[in-house]
Length: 396
Image (tube, rainbow, N blue to C red; front, side, top):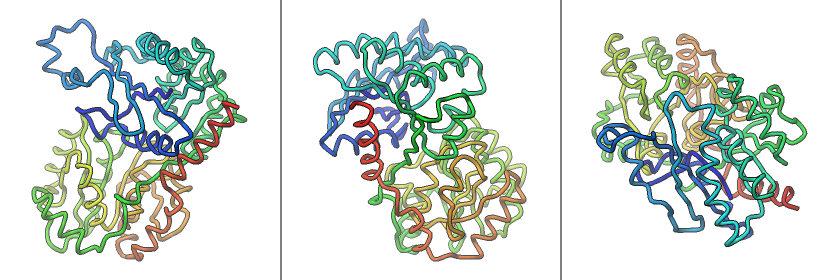
């Protein structure tokens, strides 16, 4: 049984898609039967008329269970008080999930419980594993450790869950060191790199990718001959889009920045663009569809993501596989990805440094085949094989 608060559901099909890719790849092997429980948080006690005006309204339509393909996904509801219930969410999730987990375990016994994020999933999964007397694994992905580890109440729960778990997975060696620094048992930490869908994120002839992008997304209105820099990530402060916009002012006029994603910072970023007079050089692409993001990355010369913290961002790997060089800060597993100069540049989180890094990769024009080759080792099959080996070990 896998507990994952981030997992795709009909109203938000791209939400946690990397977790879905991992669990479906594991199930495809045939040696693991995978059941995912994706708890849906909804504010309690709100009248339907009020809830209908909030961002949570679409989540009411999520089905209780989705059966299809190799993975069955359950969506129980738990009480969520936005901005207030963070320290209590593991308990709320466990309370909502445990009856379902008991029933499913009675019907077809589980061999283990895992959590796909360290917080709040990890402490909640720990309660469920204890109740079912099953071994536990917890995976850390970045913000779940680096953000919540700064909150004493959450850190105490993280440490207790880690003490119970037989294995602690980390998306990078660097994040594993951060986990150990928080007091998590170092001897149980195993690096488990993300995967990559090579059928989606692959090299395309550059001109063909640009023509297809223009035909599919005419609203982007990208100037002919422009050099495209993509930035893929939720529009939130820690992703650093404001730094990328500020850097654009120090680059030639033919460089266009395309921001992919949505989030609460969008209005502020649009205001920044307007005040800087960069409206003709910045595009807000929103949440691009399943087939659109690969086209954009295939058409881009580079991708910039000035994150404050990361484990290993899936967007890094997907951009490189598409032939777009990276310009990113030295955070998380950045050095584990940018291990060759053609892959891109590590820079300070400063507009001038970001601009210089972009100028370097745009001028270098490294062959796209060489850029893509730097991530050939990443795949969902390799990810699943490694995960199966780790999980077999802790069950045995």
